[in-house]
Amino acid sequence: MSASEPVIAIIGGGFSGAATAFHLARELPAGAADIVVVEPREGLGYGLAYSTVDPAHRINVPASRMTLISGQDNHFVDWLEQTSAIVVDAEAIAANGALYPQRRVFGRYVESHLQPFLLSKTIRHVRSAVASVDRTGERYRLILAEGGTLAADAVVIATTHPPPALPSPLQSVAGAAGLLANPYDPERLEAIGSDEHVLVVGTGLTSADVIATLDRKGHRGRITALSRHGYRSRGHAVKQADPAGDFTNLPSRSATALLRRIRTAVAAAAQRGEDWHPVLDAVRRQGPAIWQALPLTEQRRVVRHLRALWDVHRFRISPQIKDVLDRRVTEGRLAYRAASIVGAEQVDGRIRVRQRLRGQHSPVVEAFESVIVTTGPAHADILRTNTAIAALGKFGLVRLDPIGLGLETDLQGRAVGTSGRPTDSIFVSGPLARGSVGELMGIPEVTAHAERIAAEIHQWLGCQTALRRKAS
Image (cartoon, rainbow, N blue to C red; front, side, top):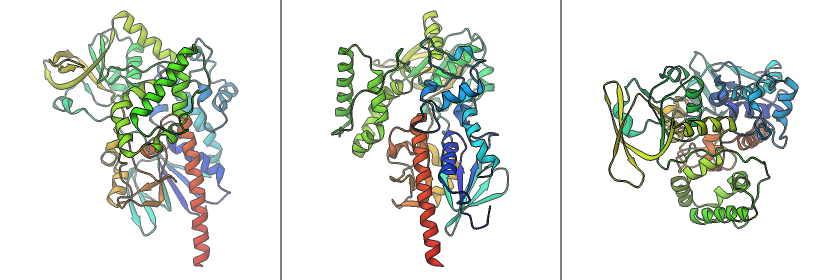
């Protein structure tokens, strides 16, 4: 690299960061920039989701919908066939023939496509976390957790999901041996006894992963999965169909109107003998346009009142994990409960949890050997839990979005600072931008967003080059 090359530092090398680096490397002419991904894991593309080594953890959508390149729906499937990565995993094939490989395999797929760029040094991988960030003039200085610094002209925030926040009623047992505040700690999960009575707080995808892990390791005890509504993640349609419905023509301007419109479309599909999956797929695909048509107050209402219902239909589980959950429910070893936790205490080595069942006033008290928190990433805590982003916040260069889903961005993907103006050289790629973008959690959406961020950085670099030429 020459000293004159601008440095693009990507903080985080999970799927969002790896995809952004991949598309930036494809987009830019040779030598246009030094692309550096700062990621503590050994490989790029794995992140929190795809670094799991648990064979029970599988991708949650068919492999035919997982791709690093928009418009090439079979990109991952073709790679599976070319590498024979699926041959040793007979359980990956669902009853309808769709492929659901172990999750780590998808990480290998992403890493393999970055490898040529890493070998040519078009992309550099600095294996460290970013402890803090300083700004000197128009440049940034990333202070690395492993020691040393990295100077950059532009920064892409593509960090992993923050951990779940410990619900306030469980703060009283924060130090209890049976409390697992981090559901991604495999050693703690493995240490749970096979006959323990377990409370899983949350009933979404992470909850399903945790239950699948416990089942795989031979857990025989009872599991209670609790959430405010008691919704359980739905499975996939037996027969795949194209998305059905248009929600962008005269888009809804209120949460109530949007819900009514979706329900009408689902009812119409039922009259045709079809199920709800294609309708919700259309809502997901049109998510950004739907979201941006809603006023801020209505966006907040969607998050407050409809998010739980949306999540269980949108974040579907693989057939393999669904089979595990169904079997345990049938056996009486798994129960879903609609309730809120109102308090907890540690008594005789167990955690006694006071719960208020939905629609009832009198609390129910029950003791558990283990309590696992799977309430989902605390995106609104990102300025507290991530020291690098917190440092940028202190400089006024980033701020939380007004919905509380992550960081605010403008239409070009640039971080919005405390002044309300975008920071020209800081971009946000991936789920942390979903408060501004809308639907931004699934691989197709994150891929498209990474492609867009890469294009915006390409344009930004062109502007910087023009400014330097003008100044000289």
